[in-house]
Image (cartoon, rainbow, N blue to C red; front, side, top):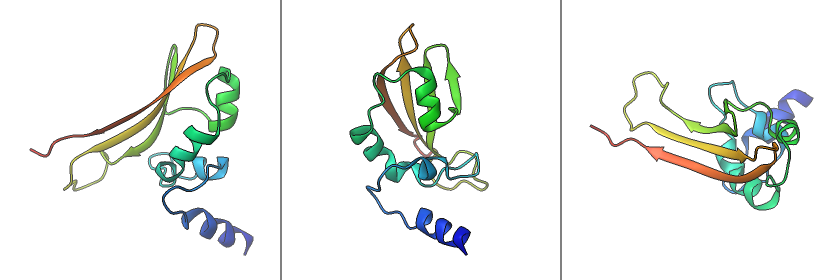
Length: 116
């Protein structure tokens, strides 16, 4: 019963929902359906800048991609959908780190391919 209540609470989010770690992590590894709704609150009300590498991972988990000085977290990626009829849409949160492993800035990459 508690499990059903938790799932209902997580999936009943509307635009502009509050960031929680549970909502951020909710998904199947390919799709994170709650991240787009909570992204604005994360960026506005939860300070990422100034956190070290470990603190970012503790808050957001492992990124979908990591380079030497940046983490990339998937927000939206419909490129894997079978029978794709709409243009491919990708949106990522990118966190840039200094050489001292301190988050310096964030960027939201949002791109939709033009339909051919």
